[in-house]
Length: 277
Length: 113
Image (cartoon, rainbow over all chains, first blue to last red; front, top):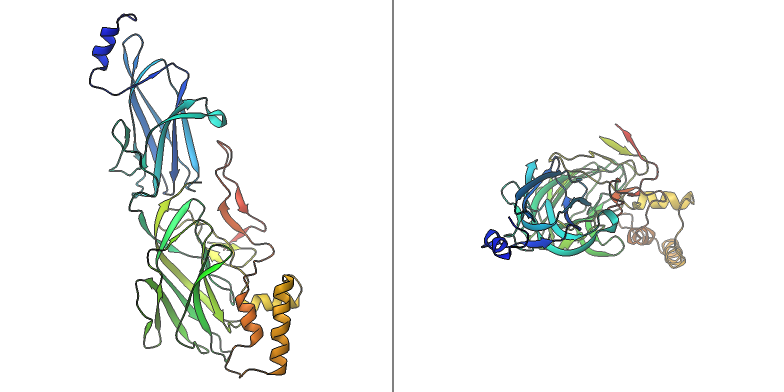
């Protein structure tokens, strides 16, 4: 293929969308991931100045802490015809892994972004591709529902669960068991939500929790009023559709808590989105 | 299973779905806060201390019934006081390329249990 034959180039590029690259550009793939065992496959097609079609295929194993993991692919002169990212290993649910495809100059800390090609959450059934994929933010999807077992505090300590860095949570339901010691006093448990500094939600229970009794406290978004089934389970309301940012907390606060009292079996359900770190 | 060397909380660092769990110590409970204040291992801000002193004086002057929370306990319950060596395993940003993300506060670490 002659370098100086525009008509020949046009015939090769007819019907396609492409970016002409001078050979100084870098294709950067950035992944934000929370799922275990995920490996991404990045592949694409190029048309070089000699008219030859070539392909590339690379891997990226993102961390599982929602921090940005990047892969830089130097580009050669010619036309970038397509790029696709798919799941090569692992099975992240929709909302657990987010991918950003960019073109820029330089690499590593010196990378200067010029174009965003595609950005979206990725799963085994959802690829991210340019051209084709829309530009979507990490919070645009439905999120993924997770069940989380929390930390069991020491005796006489309170429950505290923190929204991880790079995550956004919607708290759907929360359950914990509280066992009181033989010390006579009426404990008054409540669930609190704070932003790391300021408490903005207080959900006190409507019963006095006496000595030597075990009660499972359950909080759920959407409950209109509190109720209990005899004395073994107490149900309380949570705010609906409340989105919690990284560092926000879900905590118990127990009035008259005694030295031998114990919170345990902390389990909660959240809808999670990746915000990235 | 790990045990936090600061708060004594126990947890699995990897959850059943394979995802990472990031422990962060809870603020002091009323029992722990009362104990820490007695041992002077924590100190309150002047306004908080004044509030506590006033509640202590009120409790002494007009004691509450045995089945009710004392004014001191109400004040202590309203305070959010973090542990002096609070651990927070959450990451503080992405960190340098190719390097592990820095942890916010590792302090005294954990023990396998």
